[in-house]
Image (cartoon, one colour):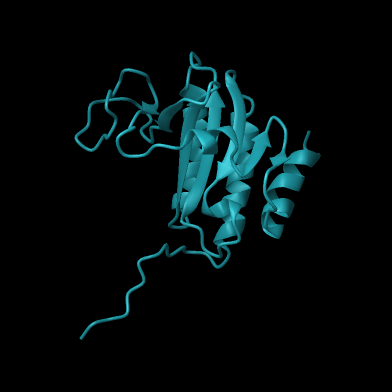
Length: 174
C-alpha cells in the first residue's frame, strides 16, 4: 500500500510566514549594525505569496574585507528560528561589485568536517564558498525583489504580510 506523500516543507506552526518574517526582521536589525554590511535584501519564496515557503533567502552585500564573525552570529540566530519551525534560512553573501561569494557557514567554529561543502574550508572564517553547489545570478544580486537595509526598496509588489510584518516595521524603525 502506497501513501500519498508530500515532499514539501512541513512547518510545525500554522502561520510559518509570520514566524519567518519576524525572524528576518530581527536579523536585519542585527546584521545592519555589523561593520562592513552594505545591503540586506530578501529573495526566494518568502518574497512571494506562497503560503508555506521553504525557507528565508537573504542576500547580504558586504565589504569584501569585513570580519564575518558578528554577521555569522546573527545568521545562526535566523537559521535557528527557522529550524525551530522545521523550515530553513540561507544567508547568501555578495561583494559590492555583484560577485557572489557563497553562504554564511552554519558552524560556529571552523574545523575540517566531512560534511562541509566549502571548497576552501577555513580559508575565510564563516564563509561556505560552495560555488559549485549554489550560485546566484548577477541579475538577482543586482536587483533582488526587495532591499531591506539600509533603505527599503520594493522592486515588485509585495504580499500584504511582507508589507506589514517586515517592510513597514523596518521603515518605522529608522
